Image 1 (cartoon, rainbow, N blue to C red):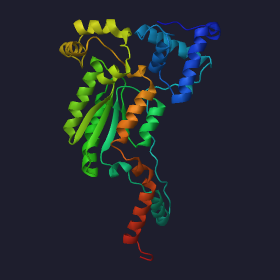
Image 2 (cartoon, rainbow, N blue to C red):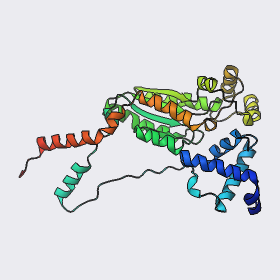
Image 3 (cartoon, rainbow, N blue to C red):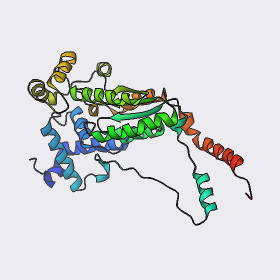
Image 4 (tube, rainbow, N blue to C red):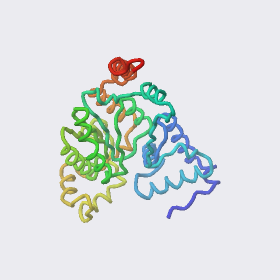
Length: 306
């Protein structure tokens, strides 16, 4: 068990001050941060030894204590929970008021006007800045917690065939995960399951072997011993020993986590990829399109006095 840090240590230790400054700058540029990202930011600046489980626990405890003593606000940090708020039109006693309100607030999804219906699936959390980029392009997002559970697949089985039928569009799903035996296995699992749903293509967007080679990042050595043990004797519920051995035979003993990569690199790759399949002008002009469609519908179906 990791012990709490004393108030005196938090106040006087020079490295703690450096760590606070680093996280403050990250939040300023990219929005809320999660504990795993904190760890990689500090490792990359040699303020934490490595990315082992023990170091991760110590970092979590340090920043927990910093929050508890008001050195950093809780609002800067995020957990895995995501909430979706449904916005509707308030009821009115008058039918005419409700009708006019519906006309005024009528919207059609920009997705139905695009060449493709696009979603992004991730193994882990994305930064606020990255999520805003996806919002800009009206992209659906499915975030995991180091794995993809049964619920996202169940929801996709319910959702995607209806989307293909309603919009009459092919579906593109871009997948983001670590580059390791677990991440590659989960990607292949998503590809196998989702592409069975119809006109669906699942493509690995990040991290790929070519990206790692191009940017020259170092393998995450903090997990090396754990991976060695797993490759020899450990068998996970979703990974067979043979799968792990095949991965190591193909790529070597490597573990790259996308949390260790700069957010700007991921955002650039996302921006270039999504802009090649999504027309931003359709999204920007959607209000004008909706207004025109409402007027056309009224001219066809609604006459004064009838």
